[in-house]
Amino acid sequence: MILSIVIPTLGRASEVRELLKSIELSKIENLSFEIVIVDQNFSNLLDPIVREFTQKGFLIKHFKVDFRGLSKAKNFGLKCAVGKYICFPDDDALFASNTITNAVGLLENNMYHVVCGKCIDVNGVDSVKKFSVNPGLLSLSSFEDKFIEATMFFDKKCLEDFLYDESLGIGTFHGAEEGFDIVYRMLLAGVEIYYDPCVLFYHPQVITSHCTNQEIRRVFNYRCGFAKVCLKHSLYLKYFKRLFLVIFYIPYLLIFKRSNLRYYLAELLGLLAGIVIK
Image (cartoon, rainbow, N blue to C red; front, top):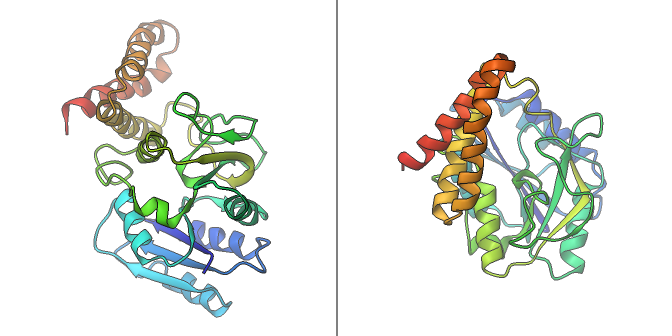
């Protein structure tokens, strides 16, 4: 088995179906793969979709687990996977048609332990964050614009030496930055991680207005994770730079853009709570 595609999922059915369809449409005729679904729904929500794609010939392992948490689900999926390589796409993302062959080709033909790609929206615009336009190896001094965890393909044996920190990520209080954490630990250990913007995933934009309740909850949870990772790795300059930027931006919002004030207050609270609550 060459590749294990591990899909931790909660609360999404149509999105999972579209993700599986994007795998079906991928150019991977000569590449053996399995799909490992870590189903945290506590229901039969995904059963019809699993049956549909199993009947199409997909090798699907469907695990209905009794826990929630993205990092825990990834570690669970890793233990169940048998592929030489492994990836963890978001359950609301899609593979571009040549993503899998591009990523596996880079891993097979080079000495890289991990390959990262980028996310774009349906219009071809960078999604989730702004990515570097240039391919290259990640380094401790230059990596934050060269990865997002949902686009990463790992040598499975390498990943088994690190694992995801289960106190980080969606489903925990510190609801983000499990990807930053594992990349940082890998780089400290000398793992070679390569970024190629041709390894593409489609992912919807996550922040549009800075006003909705969903965005406000998200920034609070994400900044809790950001704060914990900064404390864990003694990245004090990184933490205080963001903290003071938010603090000094809030008075401007009070005067000129009050519609965004709740968003940045939530970010400030997350930055503080992520340090205080362990």
